[in-house]
Structures are given as structure tokens and as C-alpha cells.
Length: 365
Image (cartoon, rainbow, N blue to C red):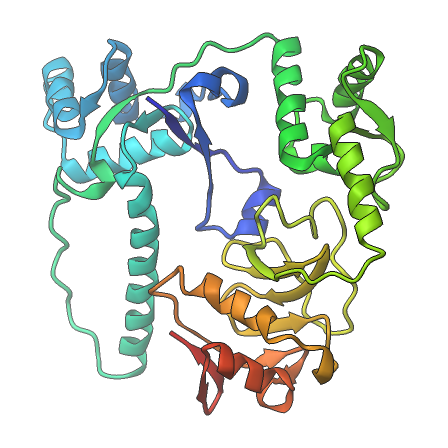
């Protein structure tokens, strides 16, 4: 079985992602001991039902939600409401204590979020228009709901010792970023921070596994990378002096492949909109350059090349290709670089890429 583990968020992460957002970590069983973060004991703040669920799952095995409910009744001789069980199960999920063996509960999170936003918009319209009368009580949650699907079990992974775990983290960072730097360690929230990682990297340097140097401008002097990575960077630096065409690619602003706002500061822009690595925000990059940023909610956009003759249609086609991956996504773009979108040279290019003209600006979806 492989594991999916919602990550516990710091206050900084919650502000960055939004109060209703979360991070989910996926762990291959083969490497779970290296990447899995064991849950911290928080028994004092757990409800009686949550503790009962843990007691049931601690007996071993994986159980369907209805089986968990039955075993709880057998243990504490008390009826368990399916809605209460779902709430308690998911509280433990977000604490990193339990998981399901299938993807359906995880996929249901995005659908539930979309439905919640739709309900909120409808309630706002109701308050502005006709009076709202008493609403029917929502039915009890079914045990067959996707949020409760699959067999649930405790997340039990034998932890590594501190040295083994730090070495695994270093190797993962070399795979993910290519270079271990202070900024990358901060971005990964590595226990012990950069001083702890730097001590390990110096040992790896002494053994010849990695090299230290100034490989990327702006990342400081304490950078560590494998020789193959350094050779690749030299090749790219040579190619940068040649005229080449790079295909623009759209990424989530939170994607590790987006180095801006994470390993590197955001590229300077005169507009008042400040880019952030938020869920729902997108960037378009090409050839190591940041070309476009679409803010969460889709209302505002930044484009780093304003000269019409230098604006490539591929930039906006890359954006709409990414947007089409979310079939239920709908928004209205009103501003580009602090100007009404209709007054910018991007208006025509965005329409050609798939946006629709509207009185407020450009509609998507």
C-alpha cells in the first residue's frame, strides 16, 4: 500500500495557502520511512470518538468506515452517527494519524471545496434578493460517500534515526532541486534548518559525493550539488549564449518547479499586484524566465513583457492549456498590469487563446 498524508500546516503556510487549503504529501511505500513525517501525539485535544477510532485501528488491519462504526459500538456500546464518524475520521487524517487505501477520499476534497463555494455564492444571492425561508435539514452522511471510501488504517512507518533521515532528506532535495541551498532548506522546512543540513553536506563533500560552489546567482555561497548537475548547469550556461526557442510552460505557483517566490525572489514588476505562491495561482515560464502570473481567483494578471511585438501567443496558449485541466473553473479577468484588460495588447492574444469577451473584461469557463 502507498500512503497519502495531509501535511500539518504552520501559520505561515495557512496564510500562504488560505484557511480552507491544505498540503497533501504522497509517499511510495518503498521510501515511506525516508519521507514520512510521523504524527505528533496530541491525545489531550482529541475527542472521545477520535480516540475510539484510534483504539479500533490500533488492533491492526484496515477497515471500511461502516466496520469501524460497528467495532466502536462493540467497544463502547454507543451508537455512532455516520456524519460524526466522517468528521472524526477526517480530523485524524489532517493530524497525519490515519489514511485510506484508495484515492476517492482525496479526490472528494476538491469536489467538496467546489460545492462549498457554489453554496456560498447561492446564499449571498439569496440574502440580496428574495427572503430566505427555513432550509431542510441535510440528510445524514452515507457510509457510501466518497469521503469515507476505502479501508482506513493507522499510518505506521518505522522512523529512521536522525542521521539516516537527514541523509534521505538531502538526497531527496538533490533529486528535487538539483542544488541544496539555504533557500531550498527553508522552503522544505527541514528540521534543524540550514545549519543542520550544511553540516551533513560538508561531510558529503569530504567524501566526494557532492561539490560546493556558487552555481546559481542569487543563492549565496553555500550551494551543494552533484558533479553531473554542475556539468549540466555549465552546458545550459553555454547554450544561453545561443539563440534558442523555448516552449512556455504553465505551472501552479506552488509547484516546486516554480523557483520564484521560493528559491528566488519574484521578478521585479512596476504593478501594485504582489505575486504569491497561493493555491489556484498560476505562472508561465520559459527558458528560465518568468513571463506571466495569474492571481488566485483569476481576476488579476501580471505580464513581464509589455511590448506588443515581443508578446508571443504561445505564452497565453500555455496558460489556457493549464486552465482547461480544471473543467469547472470559471472566472473573469479584469486587470493586467494594473490596467483594464481591454486597454492592453494582451486582450486580443488572450481572446485568441480561448478567453471570451464580456462587459467586465475576459471570461473563462
